[in-house]
Picture 1: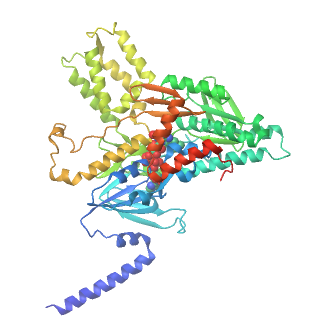
Picture 2 (picture 1 turned 180 degrees about the horizontal axis):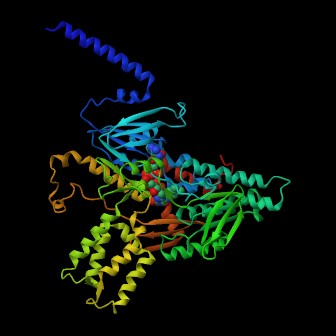
Length: 567
Ligand code: FAD
C-alpha cells in the first residue's frame, strides 16, 4: 500500500548492509557485534579464562538456554599440578594439556571460543574489550568488544615478584606450560655449558648452581624433581658435572611447606638435608642480577650474594593488571583479588562472577557471620561459652567457612585454642567458660590468612562446578524466586552459598616419596603416598587422552629414565 515507503526501507537495508559489510572488513570491533547478533532470546554468558575454574564451569554447564563465549589467550587447559614434572621431562608438556575446543564440543550448549586476551572490563555497559593473541598472525594489534548478560571472570593470577629488582629480567617462573618447557631447556643447556672446555671450576660451579626461591609446595616439588633428575639421569650422562652441581632452596619464613602439618615440614626439611639440597631458611631475596642473587638474612640483616646458573622464582601469586584496573573501577582497591560474596558474585556489580585464583570471598562478611554465630550461641549474653558450646560454634563456623577450618588446623591456631583452654583450667570439665572476645581477637590476629581460600586447583574447580550448577538452574529459580523451602530462612539468595570441601593436599618430596595431608588431619609420608599421588593425579586428568599420555610418560620414565635432550 505504501510503495515509496517500502522502496525506502529496501534502500536503507541494502545501504546499511553495505556499510556494515564495509565496516566488517575494516574494523574488527564491529566484526564481533555484526557476526554475533543477539537474535535468539539466549542469555549471553562470557567466560574469561580456560584454567581450572573456567574449564570446570564449562564442563558442567549443560543448560542449552545460554549462548556462551569463551575468551582466553591460550586455547588449551593445562593440568598445573604436573608442571614441575614437565620441567625435568618426567612428563611431556603435551601430555598435560587438553585443547579447549575438545572440552567445549558439547551438543546441547552453544559455546564459541576466541583465542584472545581481555584487557578491559566495562561492567557498567556490560562489555569486555579484547585483543587478539600476540601469537596469532594478526600481530596482537587487533581489538574487539564482546557484550554479555553474565560475565564469569576466571583469569587466574600472575607470579608475585614483590617488586624485587631483577626478578622479572633474570628469573624463571613456573606458572605456565611455556615456563616449564623453558626451565627444562635451561637445565640441560647449563649442563652442556658446564661441560665445555676452557671453563674455570668456579664458572662450572656457578653454571650448575640451581636456586629455587620459595619453599611452598611448588618450589619444594620443583627442587625435589630437579634433584632426582640430576642424580638419577644427568650425572650418568655428565659424570664430570657431579662435583659441581648444587641445588639451593631459599625461604623467607622459618620453615618450608608452612601450610602443611609440622610433621610434614620436619620430614621434608630432614629429607632435603640428607639429599644435599641446601635449604636456607629466613633468607629474603632482595635483588637478582644476571649472575648473582642477593639475600638478606632475617634477624641479623646480613646480606649475601650467591652466584647462580638458574633461578626459579616461586613465591606465590599476584594480581593481573586487567583485574587490578577492574578493581579500581568498582572501588575494590587494596586487595590482591576480586572480592565476591559467598555466591561468587563480584561485590558492587550486577551479573558478574569471579572464581579461582583471581577471586576471594569477602572477609568482612565472614567476620560478621562468625560474630552472628557466636551471638546466637551466647544465649545469656554473658560474653562467654562453655567448652562444649564453644566446640559446637567452631564446628558450625568450620562447616560454613572451610578457610577457617584449614586455618584451625595450622599450628598457630591450635596453640591459640590451647592457650584459651589452659587459661580457664581443666579442659575436661564442660562447664569451663571460654571468652568469646578473646577468641575473636585471636581470629582477627590471623586475619590475613583467613581472608582467602587457598589459591589451589581444588578451590578453583569446585567453584567452577558450583557456578555451573547455579547457571543450570537459574531459569528454574527465576520462575520460582522464593527457591526451595529449606533455603528461604536465609532469605538472601535463591542458591545455596558456595562451600569448599577440602580433599587434602600432597607434597611430592622426590625419591618416590610424597607427603599427604588428608581430611581429618591424617598425615601419610613415604612410598605408599607416592602411589596414592599417582592414582589421584591420573584420575583427576581432564580427559582419557591426557590420562593415557600421563600414565605412559610415567611408565616410560620408570623403564628408560627421563629424556635429557631438553626438547
Ligand atoms: P588458571 O588455571 O591460572 O587459569 C587462568 C586462565 O585465564 C588461563 O586460561 C589463562 O590463559 C587465562 N587468562 C589469563 N589472562 C587472561 C586475560 N587477560 N583474558 C582472558 N583470559 C586470561 N593446585 C592444587 O590444588 N594442587 C596442586 O598440586 C597444584 N600444583 C600447582 C603447581 C604449579 C606449578 C602451579 C603453577 C600451580 C599449582 N596449583 C595447584 C595451583 C593451581 O594451578 C591454581 O590454583 C589454579 O590454576 C587456579 O585456577 P584458575 O582457573 O583460577 O587460574
